[in-house]
Length: 280
Image 1 (cartoon, rainbow, N blue to C red):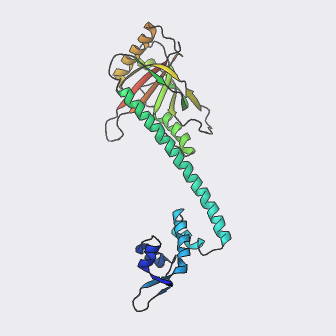
Image 2 (cartoon, rainbow, N blue to C red):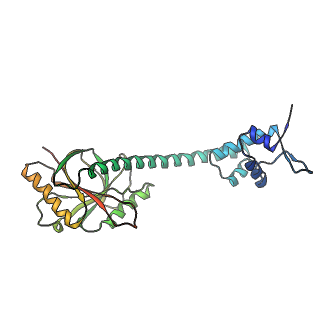
Image 3 (spheres, rainbow, N blue to C red):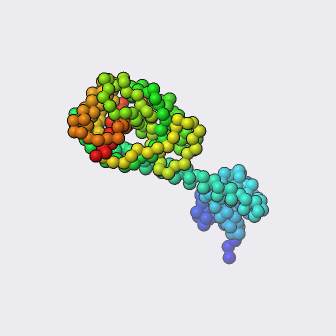
């Protein structure tokens, strides 16, 4: 029975490339049984294939090559400890991927919502939308007007999320009291918020930041392209519609702003929707 195989035969039998075998020989991870001194051809013994399987396994679980050299030269006890460490690494990676999947799913839902809002904006009419309960992370902002830049407060929310390995998405909102204002400069927000995954556990040190929820229900809404000129005009339309139709509310306005473009090289452009929860 044949015991020695050329590098090409070894590559085919083990589903590995010739280039990889040559590289493994070069760095000392997997060397041929012998080399022909006249031709330089590499020959591998059939019993070596078992060790090649170990290397392929270690590669599959993403073991760095330098660490692989150490692992295959050590005892089973060392291999056991190494595998336990790798299991912990993989568990952490899976947790990160799950968070990424949740963020992606949430962002897709937000884009669907944004497209729905886009289809309704620009008119003078108030419309109604059912909105599911949203878990939010919010920061109290007693002196922030909707025309002012909320970036520093928004950054605080981002910092809290990044500390737990999450990221803030580009969905943010304001909450303020529903009442008749002479102009939009009289409006001061109670808080700024961003949505987060439901059930997320967050340790928060700052007293003015906390987890809350936006209640589910039917909301009276109006939407527009954000500008100082548009803001008060659309706010008045929504306010007067609620007053005229004697709609009972929870006394709050939930403003949501979503970017229309995603490049800093382009002019800033946001879609804004004002929402008021209907309670009757």
